[in-house]
Image (cartoon, rainbow, N blue to C red; front, side, top):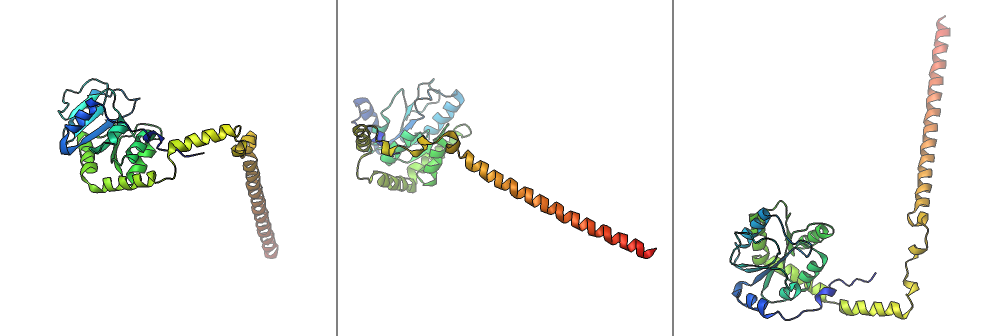
Length: 262
């Protein structure tokens, strides 16, 4: 397995006039990028209103990728868009925070561009991704179902104004980007390598040559189980033998005592 994490960060394009104007109008406060991925097109209105209320408590301009019904309490600093150039926005110097569902691509884009994150995992590997980022001090994890508008507001203010989050994500970014070859170039090299060497059979895992019994270690499990059962059987027999010996002795002693009394 060749690790090519961050391959999606390689392509950074200049922002379109529309997005460039929004970013420039944010002033010294900068922008917050908000996206829960392509699979989440809309959320319940009650939750959307809670999120909108929280976004209105910060001075930054928020670019929220959202295709659902517009919350009636949407603040002036929040712009709803059906699509946004996520990586290009995060690469902009005015990017202050990234609200994400903690998908792998989003996590890598946040790391590559050194933008601290507010993480709202939904399913799959997102829970693990979010906890990994939080444990490294690069973001704050929220439960999207249980969180309140205050929770989101506090999390945003923490990652924007607490310097430790920016410092930690910059450290992770430096570690991630310090590599001898770019992920895309690495992927191209290994694809060409496999094609050149006709499938590269020498790199094929030996597990492909095992039958299902060997692959799942059924033979090893059966042997260990047999050893355990044999040990239990021997122990049981020894216990029974000792019990019989003890009962036999006590029986003989009682018979002798009765005969002496007569």
